[in-house]
Every structure is written in C-alpha cells, then in structure tokens.
Image (tube, rainbow, N blue to C red; front, side):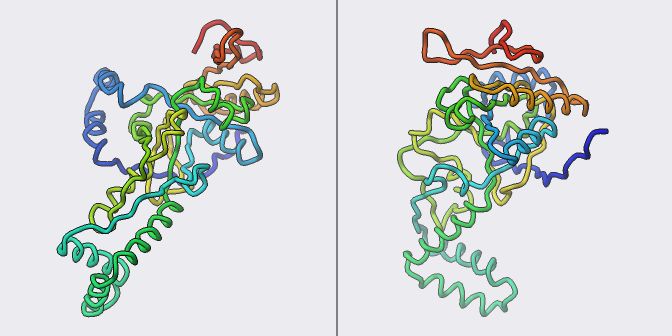
Length: 312
C-alpha cells in the first residue's frame, strides 16, 4: 500500500495586471490555439523552466519527493536567499497633498479600524505632519515584513550552466528538474524573467507602494545574469505550495558527478510517482565535453548509469 499523501497548504496565484490579458486568452483558447500563443510569446515565455537541487539533508530529499512524486512547489521567503540585496530598494516619499492625505487615511484605516472617526482623523493629521525621514523608516519596516512573508519560486533558464550546477546542485552531484511551461500554463505562466539592473528599484511610500512590490521581488544586480532566472512571486505566501499538473515535470537531469545511490533514490521516487498514475518522466545524464568547457546532456536508460544516444 502506498503511503498517504501529505497535506500541502496550496494557494491559487493572483495574476498580476501585466499577465491578465495573456492568461484570459489562454483560458478561452483551444489546445491548438494555446500552442500558437506559446509560439507568439516565445521571447517572453521560454518553453522549459529548470530547477537545480542538491541532496543535502532530510529536507532536501523531502523537497525532491514533494516535487517529483506529489507535483508541488514550495514558495520560499526572500529573506532566506543568498543575495543580501533581495528586496533592497530606494525609498522615496513623493506626492501631492491630496495623494498624501489619501495614503495616510488608508494607513490610519488599516491600523485604527476599531477607533472612532475622530481618533482616526487625529492619526491622519499626525502622519501629515511627520517628517519624510520618519515615513522612509516606516516604509523600510513594511518592506522588511513583506520580505519575510512573500513567497517566491525560482527557476533557471539553462540546464547546461556549469556555474548553476556548481552553486545550486552540490557541485554537480545533484539534479536539475525540467518543467514544460505549456503543460501547466496557468501556474508556470506566472514565472516572469528577473529584471537585472544596476540601480535599486524605487518604492514610493505615497503613490503606488503595493503595486511596486512585484517589481521589487523581480529586481537583481546584473552579476546574477548567469542564472537566467524566472520567478513566480506571491505576496504573503512564504512556505506555502503551488500544485502543478503532474505532466508539467518532463525531465530530470543527473549531474556529471552524481553518485549511484542518489540516482537510485531518484529512480525510487519516479517509481512512486508512476504508482500514483502520474506520467513517466525521462531521465538524462550530464557529462563533460571532451574538448570544450561545456556540458553534454544525454538521454539515460533508467537501468543504467551510462548515457544513451540522443541529446536533450
């Protein structure tokens, strides 16, 4: 008997305004039309998304089981990422008197909803009189809280990146999972390219503060461009999960230094997955090119650790 499926706290993604027309068109299209949508948006939407993973500890193995067997992705808080500049911003306090008044009324309503109207009005007046430097501190405090609570799932764009294998897959001893975006576009279509930039994004405490959060979650310095990253972002949903269609996972690539026992562990997960009725997933093996600084990815026979013919 198969073990009981764990209970996952899954969410439904809120589609940002920039993606809503595309998502609506997708929902109303036939399968053939959906393929055409993917081709038409090739520059924005890559066909495949990749996730590099290692095997370090029980958590890593449990996370692999969740993704491979149960088809769920766990959203992480940006506060746990390795870039200290995650969600760092340049805060400004800019707006007309009317815009300031509207914003401070909103803040007062959020903080003092249970107080009488006169007391709320007094809070608004104090906020109007407060120096901008104090508002900057308040904005930074709000962003710190959002940084803790926001949920992000990161994908890479290249399964042959030597640096990515080194940094995120235990020095080529781990695996790289391949997801096909159009197999579950209503979820994976939310993965947006990271905005690599030299200047910090701007957050205006008065106008458009909440609208700027998604842009802040997607901003990184150009030194990270080798990751070719796409992100799914969801405010206030750290440590919760996204449920994928099982057929969205289409391949697993083994690193060129992976050990046999780890390959066998993945094969056991794939057997569990298939026992639940999920589609078969192809496996591949990364090897070092004999004359160039590059990786070659070949289709693998599950019964063997040697690569088979045919490239990914």
